[in-house]
Structures are given as C-alpha cells and as structure tokens.
Image 1 (cartoon, helix red, strand yellow):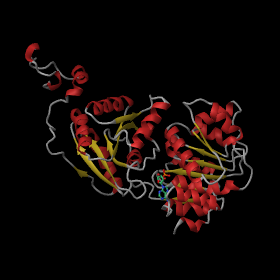
Image 2 (cartoon, protein in one colour; image 1 turned 30 degrees about the vertical axis):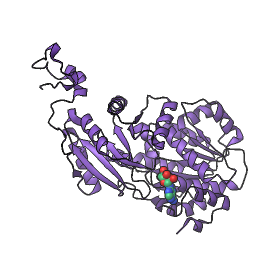
Image 3 (cartoon, protein in one colour; image 1 turned 180 degrees about the vertical axis):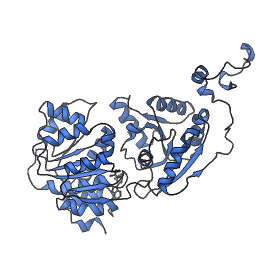
Image 4 (tube, helix red, strand yellow; image 1 turned 180 degrees about the horizontal axis):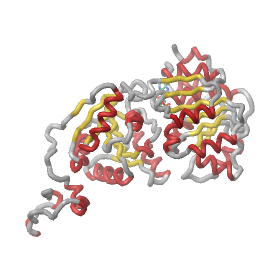
Length: 411
Ligand code: AMP
C-alpha cells in the first residue's frame, strides 16, 4: 500500500515525495489511519521504525485547517538531538505547507524560542525542562494545543522527566488528541499512558525485539585489552560509519582520544559537551567527516543517522532495553547493520539475558592475529599501575632506548 492511499493533502504528499518515502513503514501503516481520525494512539515502537512520520504526517494534515500563529501541536522528546531531529522531519514533510515548527530545548539562548512560542510556530518540539522554564516565565501559551505527542516515553522516565511531564499535562487542554510512543512498557509507563490517553488505539511494532536487520556478534576480551580490541575492530571495518557506546563520559573521552591518536576520524558525544560541540560532532558524523562517533547512552538517545553500519558496545549496556536502543541506531528502515559487543567476564550474565530475550545465541568471535594475551594494554598502564599493578619486576635502564609505550607489567 503506497502513501497515496492515505489521501494526504497535495502540499503534504509533496513533502513525503521530497523525503523519498514511497511505501509507509509498518508503524506508519498501522498508526496513520487512526491518527488521521483524531484518535489517541499508543505506539509501541523503537526508533528506526519510522514513528516520527507516523505522528508528524497526521499532525500536519490536521493543522492545515484552522488558526495559524499559535501553538497547536506539542511534541515532547527526551533530548535536544531528538527534538532537533523531529523538528527537521516536520520541516521536511511540511515543506509544501505554511506550517511552522520550532524546537525548544535547553543549552541554547531563549531568544529565538520566545519568538517561536509567541505566534511564529504552530508546532513546538520540546524537551520538558526548557518548556517548563518558558511556562514559568509565561512565555509559552499552551492553551491552544490540540495534539500532544510524547515520544520515547520510557527514555523520558529514565531521565527523571516524569514530574515535568505531569506539570506540562496540567497546562494542556483536556480536550485534545494524544499520541504516546515508547519502545518498552514497564508499569510506570503504562500508568502514565493511562493518565494521558483516552480510549487509545494500540499499535505495536516488534517493540522489544532488537531489529532483525542487524547481525549481532560478541567479542570476549579481558578488561585490560578492551581498548586495543576496539581499536582493532574499528581498523578492520572497511568504510561505513561506526557508533561506539561507552558507559561513562570519561570512557567516551578516553576512547575517542585513543582512536584519534591511532589515526581515525572520530568525534564524541557525551553530556559534558556544549550544545555547539554536540551539534558539530553529530553533523560531522552525519556528513562523514568523522567515521567514528563515541557516545554515552544519554547523548546518543534517539539519534537518527540513517547510514550507521556498525554499532560497537565498548561497554556492555546495563539492561536488555538499553541494548535494544543502542542497536536500534543501526539497521534502520530496511538497511542492514552489524552490532558488536565487547564482553569481559563480568558481562557474561547480561549477554545471557540478552540471548534469552532474543531467543537465540549470539555468535562469539575472535579477531585473528590480535594479541589477547598481552598482559596489559600500554595506554591503560599509568592509571592501572597506580590502582592495581605492583611495580614492574624489572625496570629498563634509563638509557635502554625502549619506548615507554612498549612496557608491559607483570600482574
Ligand atoms: P524514525 O524511526 O522516525 O526516527 O525514522 C527513522 C528513519 O527512517 C528516518 O531517517 C526517516 O527519514 C526514515 N523513514 C521514515 N519513514 C520512512 C518511509 N516510509 N520510507 C523510507 N524511510 C523512512
């Protein structure tokens, strides 16, 4: 069934065409007819399924009629990057309409947002915290909101936005259409969904299964050789763009600087960076200026980069859901991708949990020619030397000419 069967207004059909969409994705096929009728929608779908257009297109269609110059659709998203992406999707799909979208998030000046909120946009895509700042200053009038979208609800709750969301809900007209999207549905999310939806239609797209277009592999390795193995993996991947996940900001910094010093073009995305740095990293990665992006989970949430060929879990995700989300960054919309996970002894239990969930074993791989047995990775040495390792058994004479980098410690 092609998009034409939804009978969108020609100004919207031209946007769909310009975006290069021909066939709707399953979530779009399921959700759009209900959303066009004004029904509330509960969508169980992970990113990469096309869920943005599933809510954006019916919103654009609805807003074509009716008043302009006031906020009539509000989309809540957990991160600035996701808000920006949704805003860009609205702009792309709505390019043939006169409807305007504005992103509203923290970390940037309020000025432009003020103009948008005061009558220059019909659609606002916001992160909860900054939107509430505006509400508190009375610079956002949400009384005309006809459609609310809560996107990546599970992520928003993980990030502690539940009280903010409840406060925003109080500012919205009770009479409205609400669309609620989440990749998972734990009890807290189900409760929130019940609070804000009325008689919703549920659409569910493989919501808990890591994308089948992704090939999964696990690389067992000793903790001290992880960085070297990650470098080797990246080096052996021909072409493509690679997203690497670390658990901590510090981990992202250290790994990306190692990748850079080994000659890779590499950017990082972690919470300590300014908005400008994050945007530069993301854009550079999108354009291909950087082949590798090293990111923490929070920074990478909701990223829509269509050509990621490899996701490498440098650190094991904490939960099966987190694994699903990370892997959802590759293999998006009918593309294929690889998901590699570095596994140390302490990660075995989590890998088994992921395998149980996927209903199959994940292939264990070894890299031929990689020195798994090296006692300690040179770059790790100074930090670990202090923390755990005893003094080296034999020190080289100062004049020996040995490179410090080649030193190995006995453990
Ligand atoms: P989303 O899950 O909304 O983040 O979308 C993931 C990616 O799929 C984005 O790059 C969209 O532009 C793309 N996309 C969405 N719908 C379609 C479609 N019907 N055909 C092709 N690509 C699509």
